[in-house]
Length: 333
Figure: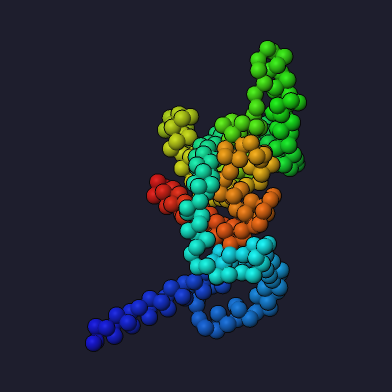
C-alpha cells in the first residue's frame, strides 16, 4: 500500500514539474524565480493585457476560420447527405469504408504517390541553388541574384500555369507549332492520360522556388563564419563541404519545407484542376481532386460525407508522413 502511495506521489510531483516548466516557457519566466505571485503578475499585468488585445484578432480568426471548420469537418465525416438528401444522417464509419473500397480512390493514390516522390526529389534543385548563391563571395552579385530569384514572386502561380497551357496546347501551342515546322507529329501534352502527370511536373522548370531557396539561404547565413574558415583550413572540398556541412546545417529548414511538400503532394488539387479534362481523368485524379469533385460535382448529387471523410484521411496521412520525416531527419542530425 505504501509503495502505491509513493508512486502516486512521484507521479503528482512529476506532473507539477512538467506543468511548471510549461508555464515558465509560455510566460517567459525564469525557472529559479518562479512563484505564484510572479505568475499572477505576468498574467494580469498591463503589458500582458495589451499583448492579449493585439493577439486577439489572430486568435479569433484562427478559431473561426481554421479550428471550428476543422472540428466541424471531423464530426460531419461520420454523416452522409447530399443536395438530393439535405438532411444529415449518421452512418458511423460507412463513409470511410466507401472510400477504402472505391476503385477511383485506389487510382488516385497511384497519382498521388507519383507527385509525392517527384516533389521530394525536386527539393534538391532548391538546395543546390541556395548553396551556389551562398558560395558567391561578392555581396553585390549575391544581392542581384536574390532579386532576380524573387522577381517570379510578383507573378501569381496561376498565371504561370495558364501560360504553360498556351505553350503546350495541341492546336495552338508554341511547342507543337515548332514540332510541326520541324517535320514532327504534334504531341497531345494536355489530352493524353499517360502524358498529363509528366506535363504538370515539367511545367515547374527550373524547379526552383524563391520562398524555399530563401529559407535555406537564411539558415546558411546564420552559421558563424568561423565554421567555413575552419573547413577551408582543414582542406574540405566543395563536395564534402556540401554533404558534411551545408546540408546538415540546414536540416531545420529542410524539416520545415518537407512539411510543405508533404501537404502539397497529398492534399493539393488546384494545379490538377486547372489542367483537368475528361480525357485525362484517370491520369490526373488525386485524392485531393477527388475530394473536390465529391464536394462540388460537375454533374449529379454531391456526396458531402464522402468528401469530409476523405479530407480527414488525407489530414491523418499527411500528418503521419510528416512526423516520420521529422523523426528520420532528427535521427540523422
